[in-house]
Image (cartoon, rainbow, N blue to C red; front, side, top):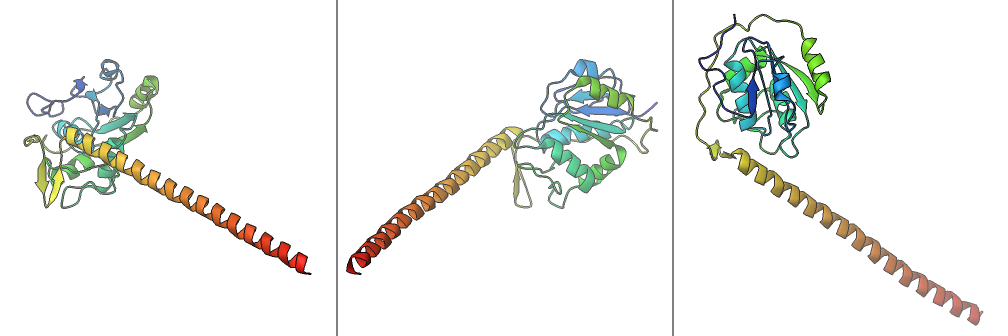
Length: 232
């Protein structure tokens, strides 16, 4: 029998639990897939919508159960947050000294409630099964059923203590709650659209300016040729 912390899973979230002795955990990113159906084949299944606190909760609930050896990442990616991209990047590249997930492309991919040592333990404990953008439950279930059995992860389960909500500052970097992250992502999206619109306006302005200049030059050249023909 594998090991878990008391009252596993310790961190609340949008998930359902199945058999705590199962070697599989499932995150469905932004997709609300059939948790009841999936938890028949795994220890825990739920959404993961942010590239900071969302990932921290997933990691905390995995390292607190050493039975879990696979993390299936499926469902639709979260626009702006790119939580799926971030958790895969963290599994492959870890985090830097400021808690930023290396090689992650999300809005604010910072880990503030879990130390790098625990992150490295999580990286060693689980193998990620990449089914991002797959929402077909039958295909996900088949992938789970085809996973090879693994022995329980060595070591004791780890209980992660989370700090308060809101925002924190780590080495001069402000790390926000999911709500503030969502607002930040929207602001960045609007700024990007405004910049793109400005670029289009500059191009159109240049085209119109070029067309007008071409018209004037053509008119002048034609006028001069007409005068020369008359003089000749």
